[in-house]
Length: 478
Image 1 (spheres, rainbow, N blue to C red):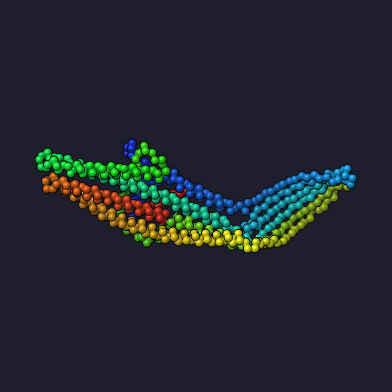
Image 2: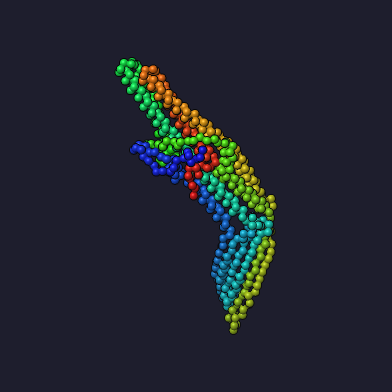
């Protein structure tokens, strides 16, 4: 059966009376998602995961540093009676960033200078470009990309978790809504039963007045009316309770003075065959909770690969190239003497290795255990998903058959009531038989509504297992 045939459109809330509010399912879902704390909390989790992705790009930010300092020292004379001050002004600035080709690699351009005042002025300046690049641990574009890829997988998991949470909210709301729909229809059936019994009482009293029946014949009808009215009171209580349950899922305060919620009649259902095996396979592919776990497995694998790289020794190339120059100015000189800027360069290797490296070895064991646990969770959830999908598909098929039989039962029960009532009017039966036929009709009508609601609930459960309930009910996640 097309899903759309069992759904209701999002329309404004209608008010039948001051004490009752009729609510469409679509409108209920929209109200719930606007306030439900679980759904809102998952939005924050997605934002947190996205922020983690942004943080993985931090090594490639440009870092600008600069500082300056001034110092004065005194040079004492031979007799400690005189001192000559020496003034030094130092200044430097640099800009650096990490490299995408290796974790821990960096490229920095720095300028350093110093102005010294002692028996004249001396300027010393230098411009240096320095490269640090790992050769073992941290080497490679894929190694650098792993933290970002793992963070992106966690974003995928967070989005899937949010979808799974919203699916759960919508599913629970749909189940509560259809239970309320059953309660509303049950009240209508019980009210109709009271009306039928009262009509029979009027007919019985008319027979008594013309002497065709004795007064005692009315007692059974009055007793049935009292019983039916008691059933009606119980049904109305159930509707109030289901109404409050639904308000709780809507995220609204449960106010004793709030209008009682009601629903329109359930949609007309056209039963169609359904294959439980096919539904189970669809659910495994589309289940959002499984998608979140699979993303977690992938993130764990990336974490494990990153830890493997940390076990390597740290061997890095460190090199620099630049220029430096000195310009002294002496008081007894007629002109400045300039030392021409001269190039300089350096190259070397830096090696370190943590013997044993138990911290990283422990991280590796933890990452492997996390990955195994995630794989176990995926396998277990796949089994549960298939099991529940097949269960709800079977319930859907059973509800199909129950609907067909219930429709036939109601049709014949109504015919029996009409026939028995006609026989009673001509004196060919008694009101006990009419009451029995009326009770059979009430029971058949209740079973038909129960089968209809069970069908809608099984459908909501099946759609919830696969995650397709959002599209089916017109819910779009931003």
